[in-house]
Length: 149
Image 1: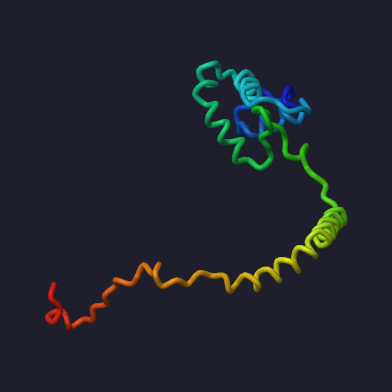
Image 2: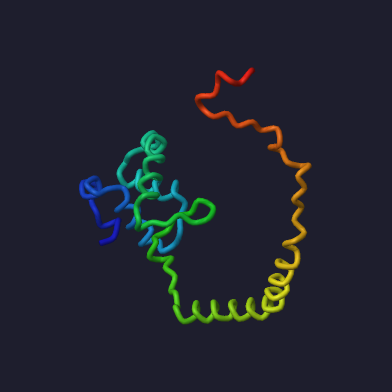
Protein backbone atom coordinates (compact mmCIF):
# COMPACT_ATOMS: atom_id res chain seq x y z
CA UNK A 1 0.00 0.00 0.00
CA UNK A 2 1.30 3.44 -0.90
CA UNK A 3 1.56 6.38 1.45
CA UNK A 4 -1.15 8.32 -0.37
CA UNK A 5 -3.60 5.44 0.18
CA UNK A 6 -3.46 5.83 3.98
CA UNK A 7 -5.97 8.01 5.79
CA UNK A 8 -4.80 10.51 8.40
CA UNK A 9 -6.10 8.22 11.18
CA UNK A 10 -4.14 5.26 9.78
CA UNK A 11 -0.96 7.35 9.42
CA UNK A 12 -1.24 8.56 13.01
CA UNK A 13 -1.02 4.96 14.21
CA UNK A 14 2.21 4.31 12.28
CA UNK A 15 5.63 5.03 13.76
CA UNK A 16 7.77 7.64 12.01
CA UNK A 17 10.33 5.06 10.83
CA UNK A 18 7.65 3.06 9.01
CA UNK A 19 6.41 6.20 7.28
CA UNK A 20 10.00 7.15 6.39
CA UNK A 21 10.51 3.65 4.96
CA UNK A 22 7.44 4.06 2.73
CA UNK A 23 8.61 7.50 1.57
CA UNK A 24 12.07 6.28 0.58
CA UNK A 25 10.64 3.14 -1.01
CA UNK A 26 8.20 5.13 -3.14
CA UNK A 27 10.71 7.83 -4.11
CA UNK A 28 13.33 5.23 -4.97
CA UNK A 29 16.19 7.60 -4.29
CA UNK A 30 18.23 8.95 -1.41
CA UNK A 31 16.90 11.95 0.47
CA UNK A 32 18.03 14.33 3.18
CA UNK A 33 16.61 13.71 6.62
CA UNK A 34 14.90 17.09 6.81
CA UNK A 35 13.10 16.40 3.50
CA UNK A 36 11.85 13.05 4.78
CA UNK A 37 10.68 14.45 8.10
CA UNK A 38 9.05 17.46 6.40
CA UNK A 39 6.92 15.06 4.33
CA UNK A 40 5.98 13.15 7.48
CA UNK A 41 5.02 16.36 9.30
CA UNK A 42 2.93 17.50 6.32
CA UNK A 43 1.12 14.16 6.03
CA UNK A 44 0.33 14.18 9.77
CA UNK A 45 -0.50 17.91 9.87
CA UNK A 46 2.09 18.45 12.63
CA UNK A 47 3.31 21.89 11.61
CA UNK A 48 6.65 23.69 11.78
CA UNK A 49 6.91 23.66 15.58
CA UNK A 50 6.67 19.87 15.75
CA UNK A 51 9.24 19.63 12.96
CA UNK A 52 11.74 21.75 14.91
CA UNK A 53 11.09 19.99 18.22
CA UNK A 54 11.21 16.41 16.90
CA UNK A 55 13.82 16.43 14.12
CA UNK A 56 16.54 15.36 16.60
CA UNK A 57 14.46 12.43 17.81
CA UNK A 58 13.74 11.47 14.21
CA UNK A 59 17.47 11.49 13.44
CA UNK A 60 18.11 9.22 16.44
CA UNK A 61 15.34 6.91 15.30
CA UNK A 62 16.76 6.52 11.80
CA UNK A 63 20.29 6.13 13.17
CA UNK A 64 19.31 3.15 15.29
CA UNK A 65 16.92 1.57 12.79
CA UNK A 66 18.69 -1.08 10.70
CA UNK A 67 16.51 -0.55 7.64
CA UNK A 68 18.13 2.84 6.98
CA UNK A 69 21.66 3.85 6.07
CA UNK A 70 23.24 7.29 6.33
CA UNK A 71 25.16 8.30 3.24
CA UNK A 72 27.55 11.14 2.44
CA UNK A 73 26.48 14.77 2.69
CA UNK A 74 23.50 14.09 4.98
CA UNK A 75 21.58 11.80 2.67
CA UNK A 76 19.65 8.76 3.87
CA UNK A 77 18.43 5.72 1.99
CA UNK A 78 17.15 2.23 2.54
CA UNK A 79 19.88 -0.24 3.41
CA UNK A 80 18.37 -2.73 0.97
CA UNK A 81 19.37 -0.39 -1.87
CA UNK A 82 23.03 -0.52 -0.79
CA UNK A 83 23.93 -4.16 -0.43
CA UNK A 84 27.29 -5.35 -1.65
CA UNK A 85 27.73 -8.70 -3.29
CA UNK A 86 30.96 -10.26 -2.16
CA UNK A 87 32.65 -13.00 -4.09
CA UNK A 88 34.83 -15.17 -1.85
CA UNK A 89 36.78 -16.39 -4.87
CA UNK A 90 37.70 -12.83 -5.88
CA UNK A 91 38.88 -12.00 -2.37
CA UNK A 92 40.98 -15.17 -2.18
CA UNK A 93 42.56 -14.42 -5.57
CA UNK A 94 43.40 -10.86 -4.48
CA UNK A 95 44.96 -12.10 -1.25
CA UNK A 96 46.99 -14.74 -3.09
CA UNK A 97 48.29 -12.13 -5.53
CA UNK A 98 49.32 -9.82 -2.66
CA UNK A 99 51.13 -12.61 -0.84
CA UNK A 100 53.02 -13.63 -3.99
CA UNK A 101 54.15 -10.07 -4.63
CA UNK A 102 55.27 -9.58 -1.03
CA UNK A 103 57.14 -12.89 -0.98
CA UNK A 104 59.08 -12.03 -4.16
CA UNK A 105 60.03 -8.59 -2.87
CA UNK A 106 61.03 -9.66 0.63
CA UNK A 107 63.01 -12.90 0.10
CA UNK A 108 66.37 -11.18 -0.35
CA UNK A 109 65.61 -8.64 2.36
CA UNK A 110 64.81 -11.37 4.91
CA UNK A 111 68.13 -13.17 4.39
CA UNK A 112 70.04 -9.89 4.61
CA UNK A 113 68.25 -8.79 7.78
CA UNK A 114 68.86 -12.13 9.51
CA UNK A 115 72.60 -11.96 8.75
CA UNK A 116 72.87 -8.34 9.91
CA UNK A 117 71.12 -9.05 13.22
CA UNK A 118 73.70 -11.57 14.37
CA UNK A 119 76.63 -9.58 12.98
CA UNK A 120 75.69 -6.49 14.99
CA UNK A 121 74.81 -8.16 18.28
CA UNK A 122 78.37 -7.77 19.61
CA UNK A 123 78.28 -4.02 18.96
CA UNK A 124 76.14 -3.37 22.06
CA UNK A 125 77.80 -0.85 24.37
CA UNK A 126 78.11 -2.22 27.92
CA UNK A 127 80.26 0.51 29.49
CA UNK A 128 80.09 0.48 33.29
CA UNK A 129 80.84 4.19 33.38
CA UNK A 130 77.32 4.94 32.13
CA UNK A 131 75.70 2.87 34.87
CA UNK A 132 72.87 4.98 36.31
CA UNK A 133 72.49 2.70 39.30
CA UNK A 134 76.09 2.82 40.62
CA UNK A 135 75.10 5.00 43.62
CA UNK A 136 72.10 2.83 44.53
CA UNK A 137 71.98 1.68 48.16
CA UNK A 138 69.84 -1.28 49.17
CA UNK A 139 68.37 -1.09 52.65
CA UNK A 140 67.14 -4.30 54.29
CA UNK A 141 64.34 -4.13 56.83
CA UNK A 142 65.46 -4.45 60.41
CA UNK A 143 68.76 -2.64 59.93
CA UNK A 144 67.39 0.90 59.95
CA UNK A 145 69.00 1.61 63.35
CA UNK A 146 72.49 0.77 62.09
CA UNK A 147 72.41 3.22 59.18
CA UNK A 148 73.41 6.81 59.89
CA UNK A 149 71.28 9.15 57.91
